[in-house]
Image 1 (spheres, helix red, strand yellow):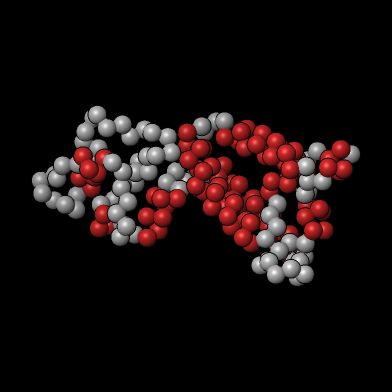
Image 2 (image 1 turned 60 degrees about the vertical axis):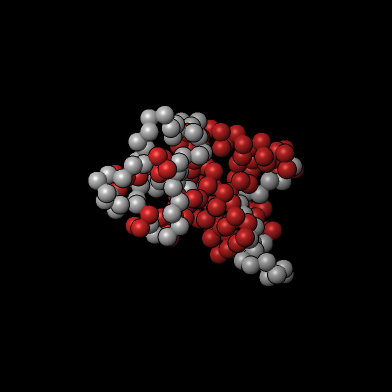
Length: 176
């Protein structure tokens, strides 16, 4: 397979000549620091190169810290559920975009509109972050959530929700 490994693999010494032994792929050099944020992709599940699969390699490259019970997974479920609900309500067929949601449905579901927010619909500052216009938009945002937020969540587990909420509100304010 792809043989994606960390720097510790170069420091590993063969353990009794058995190349398939997972013990060979651990950091045996105490001087090598493996706790560099966003750079350590090999903690946890480590496999020898011959036992790697394509999904495992993609997980290591894209989102090594992703867990099912996490803020990242909750956000992914929420944005995809909102997108499906909006698609069921109405699909815009006037453009050539794939599975594009109509503007009226976006407004109903809480898209950011300066006039409505000034009239007291403050919830739109947050809900606008969960709305996606078309398939490409939600797909690319899902990939960035998997790559960045899962790693960020591992480094700052308690602050992640607050930081995402603040960035959501400030991002919506910036767009208006």
